[in-house]
Image 1 (tube, chains in turn orange, green):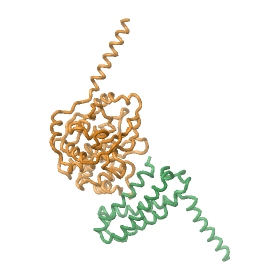
Image 2 (tube, rainbow over the protein chains, first blue to last red):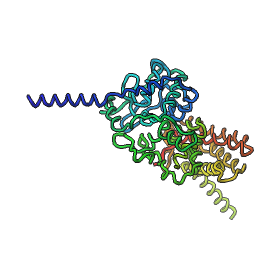
Image 3 (cartoon, chains in turn yellow, blue):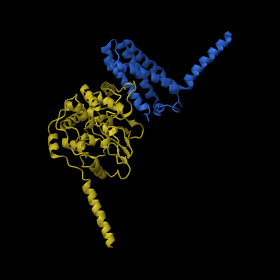
Image 4 (cartoon, helix red, strand yellow):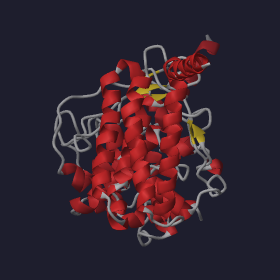
Length: 290
Length: 144
């Protein structure tokens, strides 16, 4: 009897600990306030392309209809990128700017639920507040699309959303969006694009068994999430045979120095990068060749 | 004697045709290799590693046009087996797959007409690379 009571008590403590440890983060009030200022939709379009929103949330050739995209196949199951169009019922049209920032930075939706890190908030949390605000302003100008995507199809225990709270404790870096960003054609701006909006590491950085990026091996190449092929090593060592201009050409035109084309997921990335100012690609190439 | 030569020629022609028909995988890979080589020459110019030559650019476009014409016939049913990176989607979406070649051919022909100097080359050539990527993305298997 005493043993049973002890076990029940232990289970309760465990449950309470789990609950406390997995509470979705509230957005930093300073960021919430800054998000309330008006954004520049035109500048936000550039962020939209740099962040590659359409590659996951839209169908091919209709980048501005963000009604949701093709399923992402991960080792943990399939995740369907949701409708993020301004539709008030099915999309995020009823969200506030601060709620959007909470999703972008903390991976928590307007209902206060954890989002799966297939949405690359571990990278987006390095985006500047100005970029986040401008992106939000731009997203608001896009057409509302009806319809919802199916819920994620994940295996236990990842189908328990609350468990993502533990994952975040293990892998999320502290939230500190950069106050200022460097000039657009510098290696420092390239670093910002690569690790922030561009979220390159989400594919190019290897992950551990729980799907967390291994920071010490950043950008050193990783197997594709669907198990076929590989995102190559894009550290300076991995790119030793590539010149700065090789990289700029590959990023802008999707063609390698050997005359082959960048395929797979990178073909979509190249399409997005094609909408960016040329200095951005110079910046990325400068950072990668640092 | 003459008859022997004729027969030998006939056999050779037959064998040549046979290779193309029997080994479409090899034939289409040769076309793709030619495309890659042509693209490489163009990339060298774009990078400033080679100087601009209209002939090089035109030769590349003609290579693409040739590939676009010949390649669709080189994916007969059953040629998904063997040493190939061709994905099964080619045979399930045949018309979309072939439309990519049609577009490559049309875009290359348009560029051939438009490109007269280095400036027009720099504007009108690079978009063609998108045709390569958009087809490879869907229909070519990733490298292991």
